[in-house]
Image (cartoon, rainbow, N blue to C red; front, side, top):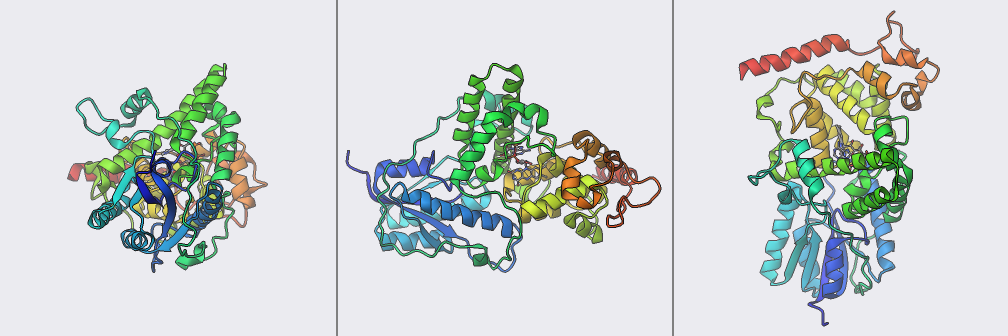
Length: 472
Ligand code: FAD
């Protein structure tokens, strides 16, 4: 069959893989040759929403993508600047007659897609965006009266009943033009960012597929039992792979469903069910961002807009650096700084601590996480922060305030996680990590006393929320 297009540009964005990539798949079957393109963002003076760890991971992924593309006859071209302007230049330079890309659900991505589509119309070339980032687009999981869900449980019930799309094959031969000039593969210095100085998880599609293999060979089977224990390797560690599209959600779902079909153990089946529900949480928050992009600026729940927050002071600095004197909080923040990752349970503890014990605005925590998380993703991060602050979709009610001491006792009972990240507490008996030192003597000379009294701050939070409720 003759090709529909002579040369299609595949604009890579959050889909840095060759396997099971919707737009790349269709570009490869509809065009005689495919020009794979990645457009780097310009260096900006201030990086509020990212940082060296995630940008370094991106660079590793681009290097790996360039190598993977070569195995299917592709040659990655790197450009830098505004996507619509760069795509226009490249169309003119290469004579491309089509642009293919996977859609991005965030408001910034959507705004750029609209500009690219306008540019393509002006040039009279084909331009097609595909749904790829989730199993189900936001518009597919709606209430009976076609409205977006605001609460997770009914959303997930509906999501689970929908038929899941199957993975797509790797493209055969992209036959990319070889003569198109490209910028060199970047490193973090492209954005004038410092060396990340962190143990960042291995980049690239191959490493992500290895992680998926490991996750589906035991971790997700035990997931229900172990996912809340930060001292255990009990979660999949796939979030950065989903964030950068090193793996597609279809492939992950298909492998999990296969593992489900292959086990007879009801415990393992339950574990896998729980894991699959977490994939639904990711899609729930993406749907929330799609339908309510204002959540990036304000509280999802209008009742809590205009709430009082404390000025960020030295307590905010202590939280950022992991020296609050609350061992589990400090362990989480230090894990984040050292690796660009933090266990989900501890993300909840540290986020609730910032908003409910230090009374600091969730937006500041949200931004700090995005500057450090390798998996930093605006929908899930915003959802997680608003959940913890008690202001979001299906959030923890404001009066349900986690106690960081009892959380440590429950989820890190032997102190393994805490001691790993706060080594000055290595020789302290685990039970001392579950309560404030009674005699006001520090647990170790090098470790601070708790920066606040949890009970007092809890009462203060309840009073702040109550007062706000009465006022509005
Ligand atoms: P697993 O437990 O193995 O879960 C499998 C996958 O399901 C994850 O990779 C992720 O894609 C998804 N998932 C799991 N839990 C959640 C959740 N609560 N919300 C949305 N998706 C979920 N996740 C991000 O990917 N990026 C973020 O920037 C992010 N920020 C967060 C901020 C806060 C304050 C909180 C409380 C949670 C945040 N999460 C974020 C969700 C969650 O913490 C991570 O997805 C999870 O820790 C990643 O580890 P994992 O891959 O081993 O997860």
